[in-house]
Length: 199
Image (cartoon, rainbow, N blue to C red; front, top):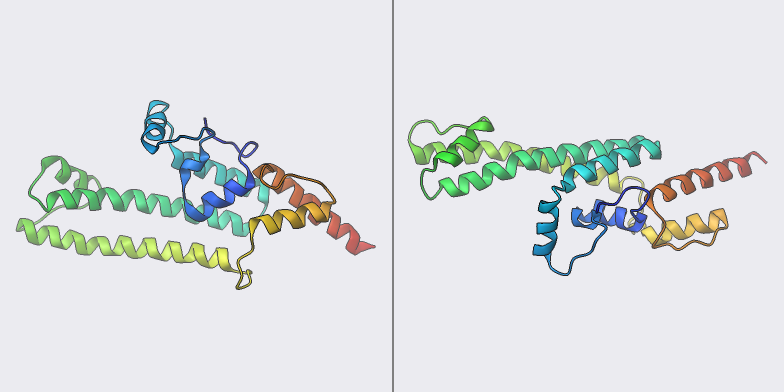
């Protein structure tokens, strides 16, 4: 059903982190997206929660402040998205006239149309700019952290895994190495380098 760190290939893990395509978390591949959506709904799978959990577990094993910070920021970004898009969707419906259900929805997020309907709607759209700016700020912070320490040419995941295999003098399938294996192989390589430097 859902990958764990033990089953999720590291190549796929990095692809999800770059593209935010959470459907890659599913162990099963679907020919049609509507079938995948039915499958996710039927089994009550929350891909966002699963990705957050995997990110937190990865950060715990990774022992990296940067990875932990990125995971926290990604979690914050998902929360901001979950607060932004429902309001935008409700406001789009309200642009075509009053709807009690949509008015109640925006009220649950702390917004209320006051005064004349259309002016009140315009005010809420302007207030949402603040949320949008927060989203952009968090996205920029994540990008900065991801880019920090990289050369102009982005480091390729296959290059990283190849260097890992060479450094450990191991023969491994780069596409099938799991995320948890990557973490522990990386730790082993760092330990090996540290021991070689002591000689």
